[in-house]
Structure formats: C-alpha cells, structure tokens
Length: 509
Image (tube, rainbow, N blue to C red; front, side, top):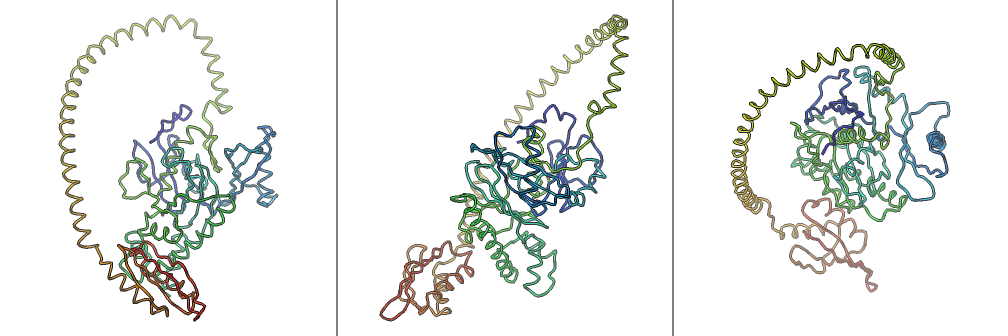
C-alpha cells in the first residue's frame, strides 16, 4: 500500500499524523500505526495535519493559458482576494492546485486560511516539534483514495463525515475534488440537539457510547426516536446540498455516498441515508492495510498517512497550508555552504601527498579484514540455508492444515448463522401487513381493496383529502423504516362523481 520514500526524503523514517481538533496523534513506525503520547523534536519524523472545512475559505477561478508560469502564483493571489472579498490589509495563507481541464482557460481550486486561526490550532504543537511539514485542507484528504486506487475515478462520490467539532459534505467527480460544505451537525452539536429534545442534560458518555455501539438501531426507544429526528434534519440538509451541487456542477447522478465519523461507523446510518436520499450509501471505513492494535482509527488519520507518502513523492501535486516548515538542511544554509567550501579548499591542498600513503595502508587493512570475514560468512551462510530450508517445509505443512481447518470453520459458521437468522430474525410478513392496515384508520384513510404478492402488499386507498396519503406514507416510513424496503403510492385520482381521492399504496417488505 505504501510507497518507498524518495531519495530527497531519505532522512525521514517515521510519519506522524496529527488531529489538533481531537488531540489525537499517531506515528507510523516499523510498518505499524500506533498512538503517539508525547511530541518531541525529531528530524526523522514527517509531521502531517489538516485544517477542517469550516476553517477554510475556498473558490475556483479560471485564468488564461497565455499567462507565464512565473506569474501564475501572483495572479491566483489577486484572484483570491477579488473572488472571496478578502481584506486587502490582511495577509492570508493561500494555496491552490490546477484542475485537469482541456478548456480554453486553466482552472484552479484555491484554499485560503487565516494565519491567526492556524496559530491558535498549530502553534502549541510547533513549539514542541519545531516544524509541521504538511497541513492539508480537509476536503482534499479524500483525493488519495483515487490515486491509491482504493476507489475508481470514473464515478461521482459524496463523502459525509462527522467529527467532534465539524461535519462536512464533500463531492468528487472522476477522481477530482468538486465541492465541499460544512453543516451544523458535528457530533458535539448532535449531542446538544439531543439534550434540547429531551429537555435536560443527558449523560454525555452514555450518549456517545450508545451512538457508537448501537447507532440508529438502538433498543432504547427514547434514544432511537430522538436520534431519528435529528438525523432526519441532517439528511434534509444534505439533500439540499446534493440538489445544489447537481445543478451548479451539471452532475447527472451521484453513484455512491460514503458516511462515517471519527468515533466509528454509526449503525443504521447508511440505510437511513439510502431511504432519505435515494442514493446508494455505505459506511466510510476502508481497508488501508495498516497494522494497528485499535479496533477503529479515525479515517482522516489514515487519509493523512496516505497523503504524506504521496506528498514525499511529489510535493507539487498538493495544497499545503503550513506556516511552519522545517529548517533547510545544513548544505542548503549559507553558513553550511561556507564551512563546506572552506573545508573543501583545505582538503584539496592536502589530498595529493596523503593519497599514496593512506591508500597503501587502507588496501592492506582491507585485504586482511575481508579474508577473515569470508571464512566466517561462508560457514554461517551454509548453516542458515539449512535452517531456512527446514522452516519453509514446516510452514508449508502448517499452511495446508490452516487452510483445511478454515474451510471447515467457515462452512459451520455459515450454517449456524443461517439457523440463527431463521429462528431469531424471521418475522411473519402478515404481522407487518396487519399493523400497517390497522394504522390506515389513524389518518382517515379507508381501504377499498387489499392484496399481497410475495413480500409486496398493494392497498387501494380512499380518502377525502389527497394530503392524507402523504402523511400516511411519511408515518409508515418513519415507524417501519427498518422493516420495509420500499413504500410508494401510485395513480392518485379524484372520482368526479363524489370528490373522493383514490390511490394505490405499494409496500415492499
């Protein structure tokens, strides 16, 4: 999964990923990603972090292809001030990258951050580590999923991610960043909204524990009802963003929605998203082949790690908002170059008379040392070759046994799961259909005809007001969202003879 570091970064041995918003940091060392408890100055560490979407100002601009390369940065800075209405008297951290385009003009995505905000977030860390190599805009973290070929770059994807202090919706099309927006539903805000709904301060630890372990499918009815109301508001907001993005960026359809949070997947949220948005939705939880001992790592930490390795290969392909770069290497400093030049001049003046003397002693010592090592190494080589041959045979035999046992285990596990599902999870469809039929009377809706086929129920409804059909569908969707796959009403007609509305309700279990 991870590429080797380029020769220009040969002194870097570890990668540190830092989330300043949650105060969680990890270090990738010896092919393992582990929590980092304390920061220290170590030039062998490559330090990466990100700035959240709500702390960024973004825009897209077009410029002429005739502008010389050396003038582009200045033009983009001017464009950023003009397009975003920035204060001309203030300095901002501005970075950009070019969008692949074959049009008459070059298109750039521009990202702007306020230095004061960066200092408030990162300066305490910089004082301990002395530098921060890379600060990425949060919306661009997802780009590595395409460059690493974890996702295909020929689709349109929507990423919805909840952190403790921010929640954002980000869209990518054909592997390229398109649009992002923060929404007022961070995990912290969701907790506050929950407390408002119940009219008291809930136990925060218990709330997050249930959200992480049971999600929207919790057996606690009070939690479930209130969480569904809150996430109903969440997806109304997301739906508005999706509608805007489709219109603004000429998107025909969104192929997949990925939903996740820094605390882990929220159970049932992908199904709830699919019912609300009508888009294929899955958990945001990819396999990055990262060795770690924790059951779940914030996905943004993993994306920072992947981005760090890509950045070390090609810095020009990234937007970097850091204000705290590491000091130049010794040979690139003015003082270092002076010392090197002085030492080189002295060495040149001494090199000729010492060449023959040193060379003679060096050759004799080398010949003696190599002769002694050759005998020892030959003996050790033969010994270890024999040991490796035996171990390979043992490993092959054990692998065959493991494979046979695994096949037996998998077959038995599938059988037990099927038996359990039949005994525990199977519900008579007649019970659900009876419940729905009984609920029709609550909305002053009458049944003209009822029929079922396989797992589908068709009900011919009659009412004095067609809005009652809409209220009925909304109620059934919310009350039985985990029991039904589809609900729809077709052919709503008004009988001119008596003014009654008729409609055909379809419920698929």
